Image (cartoon, rainbow, N blue to C red; front, side):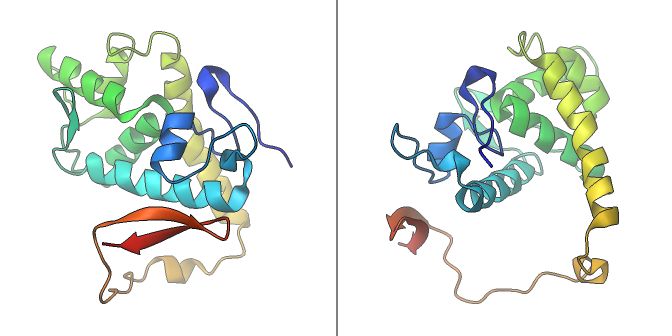
Length: 181
């Protein structure tokens, strides 16, 4: 099944814009657009979501004078992560700062989402709000119908030994491979 194309150049099952896709090791060329490859794109989307969660769990410098404000509540941080996935981490960080300046709580999505337009999301602020609202509903529906063992989800992740923290991505045999530096 071919993924779809969105406005603003987003494409594929996970609606990656070209710049974000390339940042996560996907090839985006006329002859090879890996945003439409479910294996590559799902791996990239999972890494991106994990990075966004990390960005909003602590103060993170995004460049150009933009910083996130840490969101301690896991359920609230999930909303910020989804908002950033859909609208960009820079816009969400700007909306946090605008909310803070207005005396609102920059760690509460309901306060921050009111500042999306001012933060540069004039054209897609409503789409971001709807995305943050709809994805948890879809997640809940999927969890009910999923054959996955839900008890496994509750276990602590294994600690990996000798996992490198710095490296770079290469394509080997048409597959993205992370090489430790």
